[in-house]
Amino acid sequence: MLKPDMSAETLQILPEDPARDAEAIEALFDATFGPGHFAKTAERLREYSRSLPAINRVARLGDEVIAVCRVWPIRVGETRALFYGPVAVAPDHRGSRLGLTVTGEALEAGAAAGWPVAILIGAPSYFGEIGFEVAARDSISFPGPQDQARVMWRGLSSDAVPAGAVQAAPDLA
Image: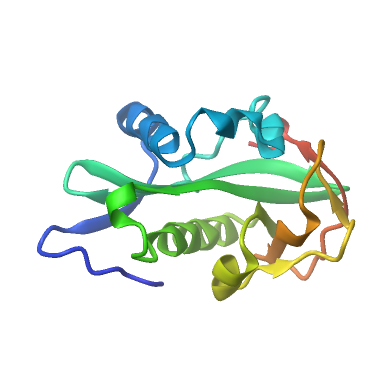
């Protein structure tokens, strides 16, 4: 996976430790997205679910959380899937490809755990670098408005092609 150069300090990519990381992650989301991120369609999936700390990935530089990729259990039609995001990188580390690094490590964890498919909403030019492709138009429908050109998927441990309505699936956690 990509490993950005972060100087002499040791960069660590680790599973999320909720007791240690939760406050720093929320502060990072606020710094990255501002209060408007709670209004996004993707938040409707997250508000009734729990992320998966064993699959989530956090980048630490020393004691500081500088990037995160959270992952959530969902269903796309009848297919079990993981929803990747938000992905956030501290402002002074943007441009380091760290978002791809934490997402890539979280993809590896999802595949190792046997999840068949990964879904995310993001920039194709960015996330395409780690194997995501834009879903066929209207093949994956989110609960609320969503730019279909940013709905992306990637196989993890199966050849399943996801299609259908996206639903939160906290029972799969």
